[in-house]
Length: 153
Image (cartoon, rainbow, N blue to C red; front, side, top):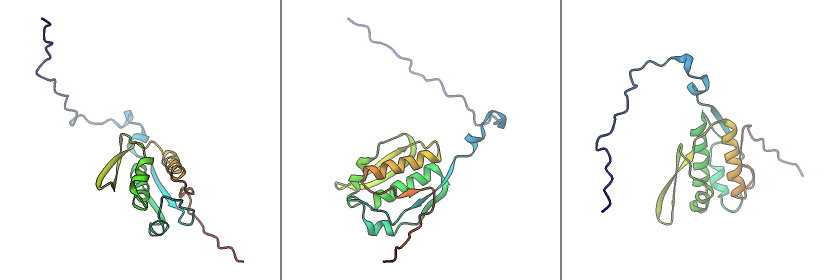
C-alpha cells in the first residue's frame, strides 16, 4: 500500500507590510507615476467590414489624457461597442493579466476579457495599431489629432 502524502494543514501568514514606511529613495520615479497618454481618434479613416461608421462618428475625438491602461481600455471598449458583431472584435483580442477589463455581449452571453498590463505609451499605440490591422480598418488611433482635409473638386 502506498502511503498517502501529507501536507501541512496550517499556512504561514504573509507579513503585514502596511505599517512599513516607504523610502522614496528605493522606489524609481517611473513606479510612482504611471505613464499618461492621450489617444486621438481618426473618424475619417476606413472602418472596414467589422466596425460601424455611424457608431465611430459618435465617439469622442480623443481618449485621455489618463493612465495608459485606462486609455487603452477605453479605446478597445469603443471598438467593441462600435462593432457590427462584438464577438468579431473580441476574437481579435488576446487575454492578458493585470490590465483593465473589456466587456462584450454576443451569442446571448456577457463576456469579459482582461487586457495585458500596459508598460508604456508606445505599447498602447502599437496594441491599437495591431487591433485595427486585425479588424481590416485604417489605423483609427494615433498620438496626434487627426486633421480632415476636404479636397475641392
